[in-house]
Length: 272
Ligand code: SF4
Image (cartoon, rainbow, N blue to C red; front, side, top):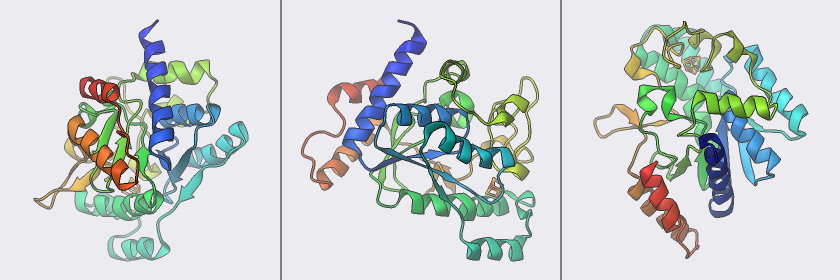
């Protein structure tokens, strides 16, 4: 069995476990390649995992068209969450339409109203959420676990493709004829909002095109961060043991008496 085949089998097992032990769970899709892999698995396996995307109001046309392409390809729709008109108007009045270029703080404020606040609404009432994050995407994601506990939203967070390589992702997409954002073929390995994403040059980090005018240690939009005790944003991260403990606590709160994370799985999570 090849390394890729093993990852494929393990990823499907993770998705099946999420569907059975953490329902209702939801995939937060940026409509990028990794999220399309998970979308394809969820729809093809008919897994009861919801999918949503955040339409920030500043996405590329090619990204927005992915919503209709998903509907057409799978005969199923995904949910779309948007920022409130009130928040957007207030931001534009205070900072200008493109005020995010002025400072890291104004950029993070824009991400907060256009991404983080709608994310909170999308996760409301869910027991777990999933992302397409991979360790190889950026230094800030190098220690990503397949399973974490998102303290900001009080629920388990799964990154089923954490150990996938970029080749694995494209191997899956090509062999399964998965629809993907054409921007990926134009030098955009990581796609965010139009004014905040550029194509990368050969040899650059996968996320070098995101907020390219900022330093490398701020390249997260806040979706995967919490406010620390020092008042500064920090990556949502906790040990796998803590994740297991929290997941089991959540399961007990929900009235499930069995362990939410079987022992064998817990061991694997620790070694991922
Ligand atoms: S990526 Fe840019 S346009 Fe999109 S929400 Fe963040 S700052 Fe605003």
